[in-house]
Image 1 (cartoon, rainbow, N blue to C red):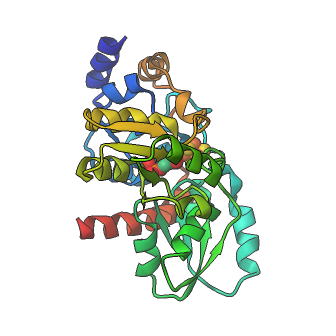
Image 2: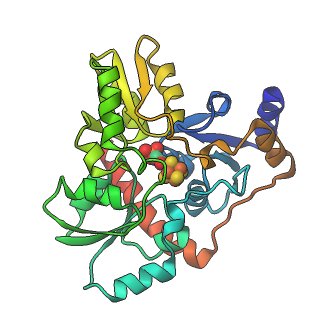
Length: 301
Ligand code: 13P
Ligand code: SF4
């Protein structure tokens, strides 16, 4: 199966991108694995003709926004993101009608039609930097209320939060973290910014998924409690063979991130099935918002 996929990737001049939460066998096969920001940048820079996106729908959409001339394949059409579905263009328009004019910072975990109405996008890796880059004291962050509140705690700007959340990260409670800390008293606790503020308060660091890998590599600590989707334990262990990683909760599993199988990838490449394409009238304004974010990230690196 793996050899067949590799052969087809070559034949189709395709690149395979995988998010850090994907199953191990998919991460092992991918050309690159990463967090949302890294994968967006790669999707904007590759010269491949086809992008096979192993992640969820908004990620494939973002790749299509950035690379309209390429074919973007999402091997399972039904791999979505419940948080991204918590905001629609219609609902955002009506919210904006009831607020004074202000910039909209939209998390990439959102539909393309919402990005199209936004000032700029952000990911968990750069939310604070994006907010601070704006020439405004007041703004709206969409759709993750936890990311909005966690960012607001680090800036003087007034942030209005959309009431969306990631069902996987929002279920982690301070009690569960305290229990994990009791079990592993020497471990450092790192959490994803999609967790609730009261969980982030207990964390030694709040980082994107790839930020967690870098942090664990650089840290002198030998043990870590991980406050994010459980799939993250695999790339963390791969990058840090001598260190121990414990999930903050066994229940933090994103079913959507586990939908794609090797069979789905093979079928998608064989039949060119699962194409994701964003209509031009949405793509152009959405690209403005995504590009602004990427330009800022590239300027920094
Ligand atoms: P990052 O990998 O960008 O930290 O995002 C996590 C996530 O929930 C993606 O769906
Ligand atoms: Fe969406 Fe949460 Fe799953 Fe990420 S982990 S894809 S934010 S539901």
